[in-house]
Image: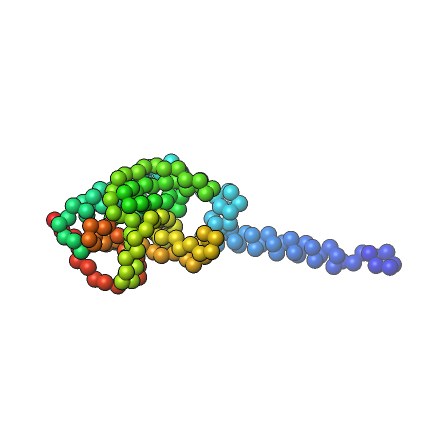
Length: 195
């Protein structure tokens, strides 16, 4: 109202226009098919598709068994400097593969807690090849929508510097008795392992 007791029409129209604009933006955001923004918006609100974690875990466990089988086969080859193709495509962002000198295990990660799904004794798998060098250490391999990676930790243990990606095919380098994961920046051309 102004001084004369009359109502200003803009005090009603502006809020209505703002509300309609926000509703229109939300509608467009939720129905934009090319980028699937609608699904991500609904998932962010907890209204999206349900993820079947039990099925994902079963797929990961079977994939882990296949992965271990290939590692053992690779280890048995007589060739000493060659590559093997160990499948890492059955894992999801909720899974983590942890590798020490004598053991490999797959874990479910939720809220920074880890639950071991399966573990196997496999020797000399805790290394990876990057560019032209070998890094031997205990490894953790995580997964996202782009595939497997080794998290690079920065200050205070945060994933500050990004990820070191692991190749999707021909991703294990057998060298001097070690089974090393091959990163995407490895430049050397190596023959495939054979019996």
